[in-house]
Length: 147
Image (cartoon, rainbow, N blue to C red):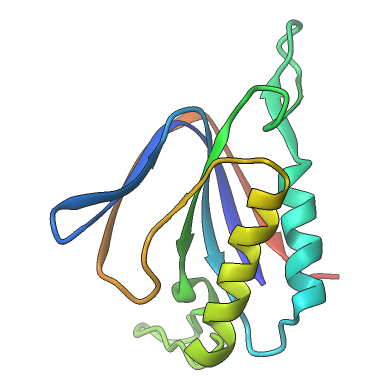
């Protein structure tokens, strides 16, 4: 799985002109699923992101977690994180097919909710307009395939 986690002061997703999900302080998470991903990989990634400490403490150090600052998550499915960019026109055959990707995406949402977070999301496969106000900016890349 791949995730791009951006610390935001606000973020929203709009589908067909209607706001589908919106958050204030928290994480905008672009989440991609690969064909080799499993429930175990999904659970580990959710745990890592839920425990990530990138919010500033009273000394200006990135030392606080999402839970400690009362933040929320906006999670957007993003198969393009698996783009093959070896040519000018990216290919997406490295992304998981919907029959694997959808259940793992939903599992990720559930794991984060089980931790007590407000989790907003888009719609898998929809044409979405995502807006965010990056805070910092702070953006962290997670790739479960990276060693």
